[in-house]
Image (cartoon, one colour):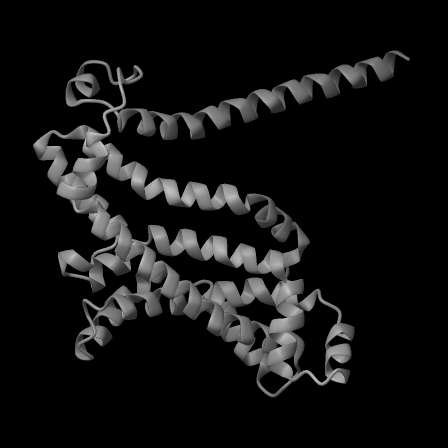
Length: 284
């Protein structure tokens, strides 16, 4: 009986320590985000005199200054357009490729899979210089469509690998039944396999959205025209300008405009995302 009580005490102590660690970690993550939101409503005087206090009021003019004077509105629209196009191109390429590599045995299947696997270990920052040289020679710099295509192509290896894990977990009996009903390969893919791999599709969408929305290096390198820049590059410009203009409220308002879509999108799909990862999307 004594040994059981000691074991129970150890378990209770372990639970308390674990919860304390999780609470501290949550505070360290949540508080900077909350502080950025609160600061975006402060005046310059409040920011300089009482940076840790809550704002005295909601100064929405900070967002107006960020959107109009800081051109964050046009940057925002550029990012939305580029992100949507990049996701569409990514799905159009990654879904059929992952389906073919995971469901069919053909010549060079393993070799192609290894090539895509090798792409997982190549950081996007390593390819910036050759991509810039290629785009410059082809006169495709300052082209938002090409930037979207670059986004989708550079993330293909990871997303093909991710989707392949989901497609491998689907029984081939469904394809056999679809074939009996007269479905071809493409109809089977989009009418049977894709709906069954919905958690995987949500996972791909989430990772792709976060990657494209927050991408900075390619956007900064490939786009030189101020009217075509994305939100991440525009935020950097806004920070540089407002830092010397001492408009701290507008600067933090711009930061919130960058963070908010990602947070909203994640909250909308987080249940399906965590469920998708546990269902085998990251299996080899």
